Each structure stands twice: as C-alpha cells, then as structure tokens.
Amino acid sequence: MTKRFSAPFSLKKAPSTVAVSGAVVAIFVGALFYGSAMAGAEIWSTDPQSAYATVWNNLGGLYFGVILPILVAGIVGTLMQPEFQRANIQWIGSQPGGTSFVFREKLRLLLIVCGFIAIMQAFIVIAYGVFTGRTTEYGFMSAVGAALLSGVGMLAVGAFYLWISTYTRSIASTVSIAIALTVASMAAAVATHFAFNSTIVEMLLPTTQVISTSFTRNLGAENMGLAMLTVLPSALCWSGMFLTLFKRRLARG
Image 1 (cartoon, rainbow, N blue to C red):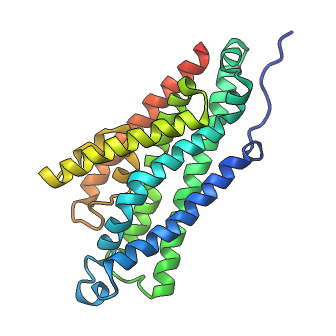
Image 2 (image 1 turned 180 degrees about the vertical axis):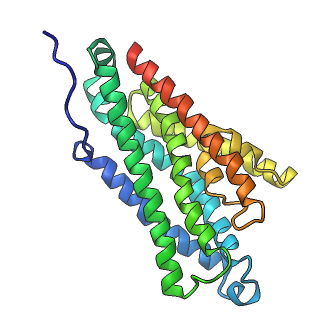
C-alpha cells in the first residue's frame, strides 16, 4: 500500500527561511532610516504634509523595488530546498495526495512568511513614529497600511517564483533569475514613471507587485483608495494564476 502524505507543515523544516525572513526585517529597519536621512530633518518642519511620502519614496525604490523581490525569491528557494535536494518533484506528482500536500505546505509557509514580514514592517513604522514623535504627522497611518499591504505583493512575487522554481530546481538559479527580472522590470518601471508619470508597468508585471502594493510612488495621495482598488486585485490575480501554475507543475513533475 502506498503511503499518503500526512506530515504537518512547520517552519522548523526550513530554518534558512526563518533566517532570510529575519534578514528582510533587519534590512527594512535600515531602509527606513536611510529614507528618513535622505529626506532630511528639515522636511518635517518645512513640509510636514509630504514628509512621510518623501521618506517612503526614498526607501521604497530600492527596498520594495529591488531588494525585497529578490529576497522573496530567495525565501521561495529555501522553501523548495528539500525538493531541490531530493530531486523528487516528479516522484511527488506520482504519489496519492503528494501534489496537494506539497502545494498546501508551500502555500501555508509562504503566507506565514509574507504575513510575518508585512506585520513586522508595520510594527517598525509604528515604532519609528513613536520614538521620533511623528505619529500624528500626515501620512503616518498610510505608511503603516502600505507596509501591511506590501504583503499582498510579496505573495504575488512569491507565487511567481514558486512556479519558476519548478523549472530551475535550485536556489541559486531561482535567485539569479530574480535578480535579472527585477532589475529589468524596475528599469522599465522607472523609465515609464519618468517619461509618462505613470505606475502602470509596476502594476502589471508580476515581478513588481511589491513596489506596487507598497504605494511607494503615491503614499498619502488623495486617490489612494482608488489605487487600492486597482493595485490589490492585480496582485491577487497574479497570485492565483501562478499558484495554479505551480500546482500543475508539481502534478506533472
């Protein structure tokens, strides 16, 4: 009789995932203070209405646009590391319940990691506001909300690289592809932003969903509510599509 998959999922199986996730949180702390330093101390007194938006824009281009998507790909690589090491993706697809078990395990772990990072980002923004006495400034709550919503973008990017990882079957290859795609897509996004003052490229590409859902370009804008109705469905659609493709690849081996 063939043994069915029934083992519980646990982050204890992926200590490297925890390590990379912790590194992401530490990098965000540095990025926040970098963004604040680039904005300058005088902006809080001369233009408090746009201070948080300026800080967010300064940190977001590099952190949400480049660093975080690549690290999400690295996290995905660590989640898939057991399958890479055992080279058993094809075997999994042939086992009763194998595809469903692995799919659920990876999805749950990805959701936990994305949720953890998003919550920690929001906590760090709150801590920054409390310790600097800037919790009442315009844009503070928008920054907290954007830090949380970036988790939806992380899920979309993570789903994309889960699918990619079934082809690369190695952490190094997955991260290498992530670096190339992230740099290329951000170059296109920046060019479009400067040429047409548009964030359409960031919204449409799967590799730029983190910067899109973090509202790096339009934090605190009057049309943020409308932007949310546009940006979040896009990220959720990408997530659903690539998770479906990921499951199909697992089934095919």
